[in-house]
Length: 246
Ligand code: ADP
Image (cartoon, rainbow, N blue to C red; front, side, top):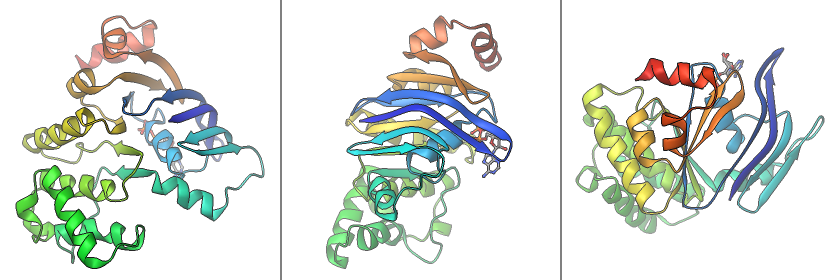
């Protein structure tokens, strides 16, 4: 479903990803953890080409791109790839002048080319799925941070993606609002959605992840089931990082 091989990315002289290999099967949840600055967000952004890898192979569904010097993906490849992945950002960036339903409808109309009535119907369904069926006509400023992030999730699902990418989706929220967002993510995971989640929520990772990767300085230093990674880390660096958290 998703596979990267030998992925490298630098910003100027700074090597941020130094040879990442991973694969994720359909319907599975991958959680990416690691210290700040280890390259987690950059890796996530490579999956939908918000960042372009320098070197490496990236496969999402049927699309395979082989990055090397001088290679630039075609615009249609970028669009095709982005249609397969929905991104949920740390700050939800909802359009302030549009209602919850309006925010979700946007992608349905512009990307999916649905008419307004159909887009409205689907957006109500999606809002229902994230527990906000009764907030469809509320504007973002009338919603709590947790509710806004749930609209962000519904919006990411609107393009009917093969995979949902989450970039620290709860880190901008007040602690009492984190639970409602994690609950929605959990229910998506159990409905069979393929998900890649960058997070510091270790309890969520332990409960929901099929696989965990722990990154440090642009490399994967530990990977496996939550049990393997949390209870039996192989490298001293991983043990040290996990110790700090617990
Ligand atoms: P993490 O998500 O693990 O905190 P990031 O992927 O955000 O790590 O960042 C890894 C490193 O890459 C950091 O040192 C960061 O400053 C740098 N970086 C990230 N994005 C950019 C960018 N667009 N331009 C320059 N440097 C960047």
